[in-house]
Length: 42
Image (tube, rainbow, N blue to C red; front, side, top):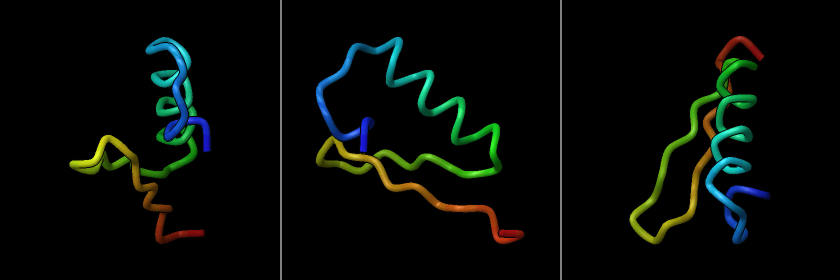
């Protein structure tokens, strides 16, 4: 997953925006990784 790899902040934010636009939620973890929660409608 692109969020858990070293990418620039612009790329990370774009990925988060795209996931949220599809109805998902991006949850940052304390170890600097991310968890994706999908929409309950899917």
